[in-house]
Length: 318
Image (cartoon, rainbow, N blue to C red; front, side):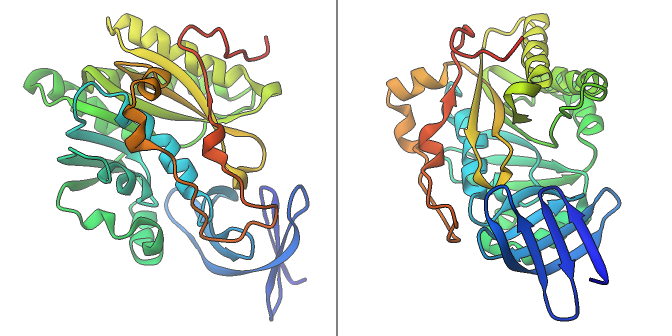
């Protein structure tokens, strides 16, 4: 083939007639068309129309979301934050979420009055507005939403000062940024910068508010980065005198392939307690599939692995 684009788990072989891709770990060879391929100032973006997952969004060759299971990810990301908040989550901050599905999920929650979304990549967000409307349903047009095109670290540093002086605190915060690296030579440097962001966010969160953070993929033999994120978050809460409960959880996202998405939740009550108290009724994960998966329909979010608040049933390898 004349041109060959290599992506994580996907190889596109492009000729004059078609593009094909191979996911030998699960799916086998099927055909896909390239919907779009362009560069922003931050990443190479590719959007495929695939037989198994519908549209697939890749940044720098790594899967970010798919039409078939993006709802799994975004509901797993948002709903624990919204259900574990004491009182209604009226003011919500979203970091990242360029596909605009995160704000769609937040806006579906009762009582939400204002959402600030901060994303650095305006080019991608503008693309999503036009080409991913069947995912986000024009959620960005809701008058409750304000989008800020800015670096999350710089924006939150300024907003943390404002929050402290003017008491403009958030009830819930949802962090939908890139993964921490699983490379042992990289993540120790990333975790320091990540901790700075968490410090800013905790200062912007009202007492007994809630927050969820996507940290990356949980892979048993590469658990150091996730353990470090968990430990650093505990330290951040302790330094700031916070009493909220910190709880890890992870969920299968079929298209990610290599493991489960790993999240941290902070809230006035544990996720398990929210379920027991009946607060979860409004947040029950629906099983939604907008594309036919070759390996069968899976009720992925009904098998969420909730870590305990005392670490007793959450063990990463030493």
